[in-house]
Every structure is written in structure tokens, then in C-alpha cells.
Amino acid sequence: MSVQERKQRERAERERLIVATARELAEEQGWDAVTTRRLAERIEYSQPVLYSHFRGKREIIGAVALQGAAELAAELRGASAEAEAGVGASAPVEGVRGRVTALARAYLDFAERNPAVYDAMFQLDGGLAFAAEDTPEALKDGFAALLETLRDVAGEGVEPGLFTEVFWASLHGLATLTRAGRLPVGDAERRVGLLVSRLAVV
Image (cartoon, rainbow, N blue to C red; front, side, top):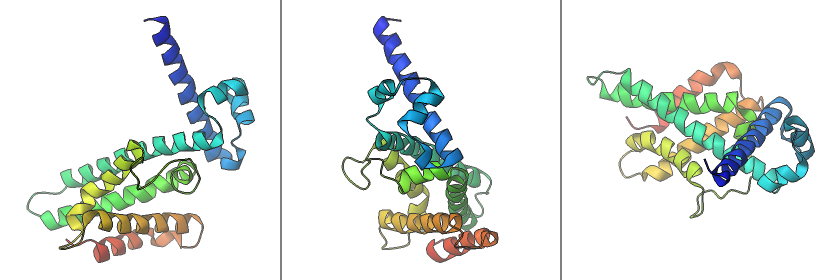
């Protein structure tokens, strides 16, 4: 390994450590607790080293959001694939409904398990563009993971991308309102069932 390759690998490892530490601190104490000073103390690097990777907290939030988007996409695809594998070919309607239900549950579970990451993705300013030409690939792939399953239930004459946006907005609303204590926790499964039965054409 050349000196340059070793330096690049060390730099990538430092960057991963910064992002992982920011996530950990945000999940423990909220994003207000994430400062460059506290991060530097936790990872035992100087603040100038942190600034050599990220220009500030906004870029760190953006990095966490991209990481979260990749993780969410993987979980959504995994849930949909597992649901599909568990349903026989003799019941295609149940199969589609099962995949959409699994997708919705996986989305809401991710939001509940990773509140700080979810905030970085959708509530905080991480300097990332959404629904634009310069949208990062990880965000595009997160949307694609929804679209891959939801395009099958958009209904005749409905543009699948638009339907996916509406379904996603519904999931986001459920996740956000539940977390804020605005919706009773005990009815989560019934809400998913209602969302799937009313929006998804199967």
C-alpha cells in the first residue's frame, strides 16, 4: 500500500468515526448536544482535524442523513423481499398487499429506532438537495426503494412517482405525529392497515 493510499484510508476511517460519534451523541442527547468541541473530545481529535473533514455541524448532519438514507433503503428492500418470499404465487393480491404493508412497517420501525438519524434526514438542514438534479444518489435510492414496491399499487392512470410521494408523506406524517405523542401508540398497526387498504390499489 502506498503512502497516499494509506493516508486516504486513514482519512476515510476518521470520517466514519466522526459520523458514527455524531450519530451516537445525537441519539443519546439530541442534535443540540452535537458540537465540534464535544465531538473532538469524544473522538480525541482536535477541532481543526474535524474541520478538515467537515466545515461544520451542517455537513455532519448531511453525512448522517446520507448514511441513514442508505440504511433505510436497504431495510425497505429487505422487508419487501422477505414479505414476497413468504407469500405463495397462488395469492398475488395478498403478496402485493403484504409487500406494501411490510414496507410501511419497516419505514415506521426505522423512524422509531433512529430518531436522530430520521431528524437529520428529514427535519434538519444538512445542506442536501431533495427532488432536484443535484440530489445525492443515496437520497434518490431511498426514494427508489419506496417506488420499487409502490409502483405496483398506484392504480390505473396514476403516476407511480406521484403516488409514492403521497404514500411517503403519509408514512412521514405517521412517524412524526406518533413520535411527538400526537397519536396513540397502540393504534400503529391499525393505521398501517388503513393506509395500505385505502391508498394501495391491489
